[in-house]
Length: 458
Image 1 (cartoon, rainbow, N blue to C red):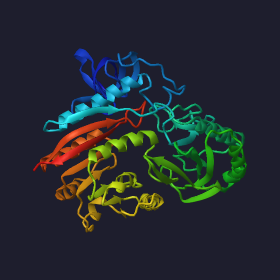
Image 2 (tube, helix red, strand yellow; image 1 turned 180 degrees about the horizontal axis):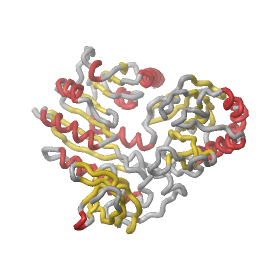
Image 3 (cartoon, rainbow, N blue to C red; image 1 turned 30 degrees about the horizontal axis):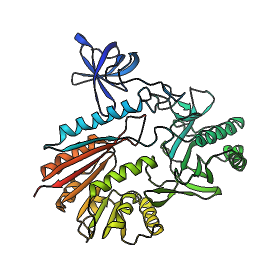
Image 4 (cartoon, rainbow, N blue to C red; image 1 turned 120 degrees about the vertical axis):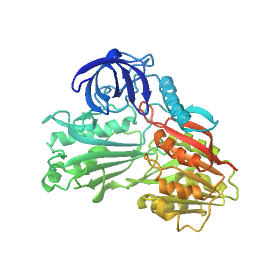
């Protein structure tokens, strides 16, 4: 295969998350992202490394047998998200379950039980948090507000009818886009580092029906004057929303990176927090709090984790990589004590507030890197829950965790390939995988969560 040339072939298998192996007959094999098993595709070879070819998808010439649905979202194809919409939800779950099982089958060295995959209670309108970007749909085009165009770092697809969020999000997005377009307010150019409008962040409590809106901009004084944010507040307040509008925020961010962060946060209306309920507990969520983006799916995930944790009476539990302490607080009512460790200080402060809010006095939350912090904790755990970021656990930290020698470990992973890598060390050090389950927290996308129960061989 030659770089830059067009080829056709059939996708014979899929590796997580979306890497399809394409058989082009005598011309060879290639890996092409964004494909499905059974599709016949055309692609352009973009890289050749160590004799292996990587391609960029050009067209789907024949659909996969798994593709049995018509995309619900009008932005499908242009938008870079929700690439599984051509499959029924049943087929999405089947594919994700098989991908996770294949990864675990190759990683687990003894017999274990794979319990299959549990779906999200809602396939649509499930996200409680969404970050939209300002930009243009093409160079020097009109103002856009939405999500990145498929395969593009710069172009933005205006998502007025996004289907994975509540319809109130779309009303708010359209209101803000039209308001700023009428005033010719400039978006922030990522390459030139000038302009004003950067992001729109919306958070909603699915159970409580509360919603908060945050507009992220630069500090450009001329554009800020032109934007007239108090006028925008009145426009948003006048919308016919299903949810209770709790707050409108203005976040100023002059950082170079294309991320949502705050140099200063101004409350233009109401409060800067909302509340959400999970498994009978209530959680206070601020603008930047980490919280699972699928509230009802999180209940499924945490219920499975709690099931795997098992008997907790009179036991001391470590919740490592604890975020805002959701798992810790779910386990605390039936445990002796739970110690949570999280590197993000704001998340730790939120965890402390929420624990107090829920009347839990047996939770301790510590801010810091797990690798360093656990050396200073005097408590010794009876069992450990792990919920690390996508890249998994630092091997040095994992070794320290293993050295506690607890009988049971529950590992929650948002990237099964990272889990597989960490299982290698865990098994080498005497742990056995007892059972595992996949949970779909992100319908219509390639992402999937995995919960794994490990027991120490005695």
